[in-house]
Image (cartoon, rainbow, N blue to C red; front, side):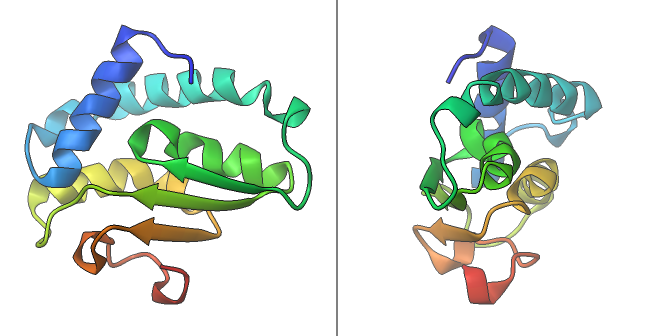
Length: 126
């Protein structure tokens, strides 16, 4: 993963927010735009390394934005998340709202605890 300091600051905010900590206002449209820009730049090299039928296991918020380009390249994409909160809060909802457009391209999701999975994910694929 390549990224600048702003990208890693955004993903650190996401990490804390998924745990239920931090300021949800920090996950605004500007943050989403920068996050998308950085992951789009990372995705450029994927076609050289991914073949149809490959399995791509992504891990945590830094990589969520790679789910769609990997799926488009023919990979089966699974996103893994070891972080979360047992009960949703306004902060966790903001984090999942930020990540949702990126995660929907994954074929499946793995969480360390069932309670960490947001309720909008297809339970058959969690």
